[in-house]
Amino acid sequence: MIQIFASDYDGTLFRNSTVSHDDLEAIRTFRALGNKFGIVTGRTIHSIQTEIEAYNIPVDFIVGINGGVVLTHDHQEIFISDLDQSVVDAMIDDFKAFEVSFYGVNDGYRLSRVVLDASAHSMVPNIPLTDLDVLKQERGVQALYVVTSSPRQALALTNHINQHYGALHVEASQNVCAVDIGAHGISKATGLQKIIDYYDYKGPIYTMGDSYNDVPMLKAFQGFVISTGEALVKEMGVAHYSSVGDALSTLFNKK
Image 1: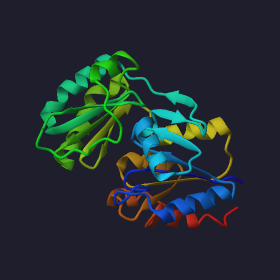
Image 2 (image 1 turned 180 degrees about the vertical axis):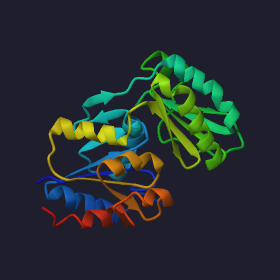
Image 3 (image 1 turned 180 degrees about the horizontal axis):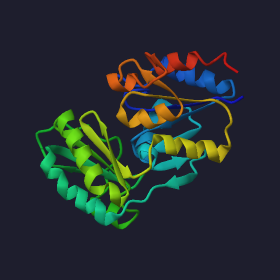
Image 4 (image 1 turned 90 degrees about the vertical axis):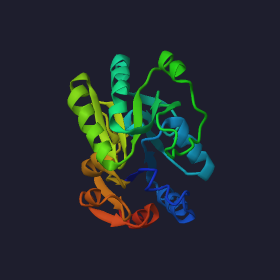
C-alpha cells in the first residue's frame, strides 16, 4: 500500500540554510519503494518551486501558502483559495498597531513585500517581488505573511485578526514572531486532503513540521515533529525526529 509523507519546508526539511544530502537520499529511497513525498509550506508556489529546483528535491505534490494553493505532480492547479480584497485592505490598515516589521502578500504564486521598519532584518526573498498594485489587480491577494517584533506581538495580531475578521472568512495563525493570514477553513491539512482525494490515496498519511501553522496537518494525520520544533507543537506529535530523513527511514520497511 502506498504511503504518503508530507513535509513542511522551512525549519523542517530546510534547516541550517540548506536541504541535507541525507534527507534527499531518504526521500529518493522512500519514493523508489513506490511511496509519495510532497512539500506543504507557507511559501508561495514560485518560491517553493525555486527551492525544489535549487536542491533537486523529488516531489509528487506541492501545497503552498498553508493550503491555499494545491498542485499535482505535473504542476496542475487543483485548488486556490479566494480572499475578499476589501477585507485584505482593512487588515493591512490594522498592522501598524502591532509593531509590524514588514509584511508580504501573495496571489498564491507571486510575492509583494511592504517594509514598515527599515531597521528590522528581513530575509531576502528567493524570487523577484511583484508590485503590490499589480498583484491586487491581476489575481488578487490570497494570503498574507506578517512579521512582528516578538512572539507576544504576533499572538496579539493573531487574536485581533481572528476576532475582528473571522466572521468575514479570514483566519490567522501564529508562526513564532510571524502571523500567517489566509481564507478561513484553509490549512495545511485541507490542502493535503485535496491531494489525497484527487489521487484517491488509501494508504497511511504521515506529516512532519516544526511550528504552529503545521498543527492542523500534524493532528489530522500521523504527525511527526522535528526535534528542534516548538515545544508546544512537539507535544502534539506522535514522535520526534532529528530530520526528515530519520523519520522517513522508520517507514522504509512498513507495508
